[in-house]
Image (tube, rainbow, N blue to C red):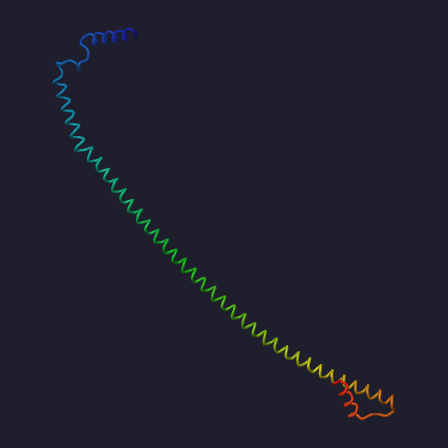
Length: 181
């Protein structure tokens, strides 16, 4: 194994001493230029007819896809704005309807309150009139009883003082005269 390594090293040294780099040897330049031109022509033909059209197609396809995506995004944005506008319109209409319903309910409640208040006022007025009539009747009845008591007391006093029973007309006139004074 060591001998094979030494042999390879000797061959490498001989090749290096024999002439140097072959691409710098001027005798091989025409063939190198020929193969450079052939390789360049083949690579140019492959690039122009096969690789570049595919790359261009891929770029164009990507550009079209991006444009389609942008169009779809713009359409989605427009639809979203329309939906937002419709939502805002329906929200505004709902608010108007809610205010109208609240106003109607408020008006109905106010009308019911007014009707109940009128009914209560009428009921209270009736009860007040009845109470005032009873009070008036009670006053009249009390005044009559007071006059009757005054008449009875006057009659009793006169009987006790003069030992005579006065007539009802004389007693009533004397009580009436005393009340006016």
